[in-house]
Length: 190
Image 1: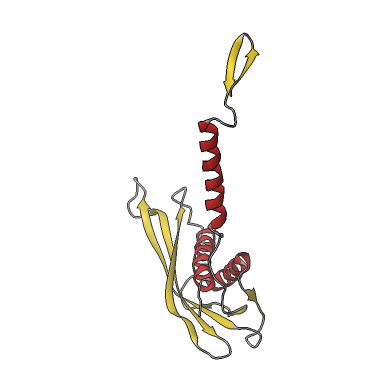
Image 2: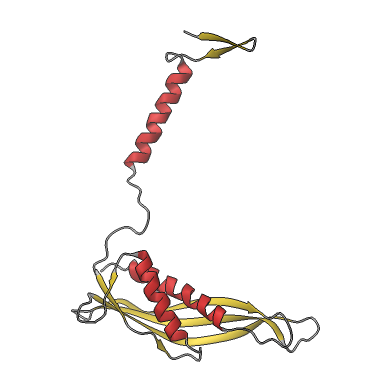
């Protein structure tokens, strides 16, 4: 059955509920809803962590990066809180797991040189390297062996007399390193 409607002198044909096109599109729509509803897709990492409370030790800075330990400690705590899978506690006695991070190396490598002076670098790449270790607080069992993490950041000087500001790339590199360590610790299952 089809309907005709006059609008501006032209006629339109509407498909009725008994037409094959309407039936086919309805079946496809319901199948699509069924498939999406039955997947049980969820955002984020799957499974639950075996620990609920995490103690993050102050980052030990064995590198030559100035103030990098404090920057990484703060960024690491912020990332763990942002992910929300574990609570951070203030003492080792209250924790189910303990995260220990040690900065081991810091490099500042020239990336590009000025066209008028090949001795002075125009941009630098800053690299931070850290070792992270996660262990169970009650048993002392190692949950995450000492694993190496690294991050990079770049800085560009605008003039010959200007020295590169190392704080901003150091903060960026610390945040990147914290994201990697927090993501790895939050996906550890024991």
